[in-house]
Image 1 (tube, rainbow, N blue to C red):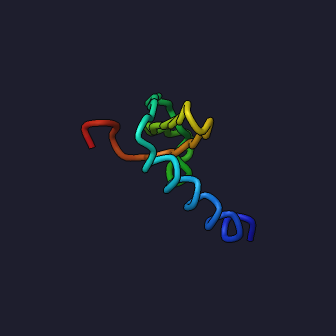
Image 2 (tube, one colour):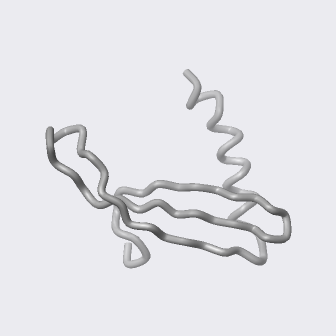
Length: 69
């Protein structure tokens, strides 16, 4: 399974980005189709993390509320 093989790489990138001293973050809310309820959508959040110094970018999707959560 591809996600199992990419997991360690993603975890390493996440650790490197989130421990950076200078980090730019963008939160974007988006409607996502709900696989459990045909025709229904929920509000999800796509987070983009950018480290200008090391030029790394990490994308993270979360189903739970944004900054308040």
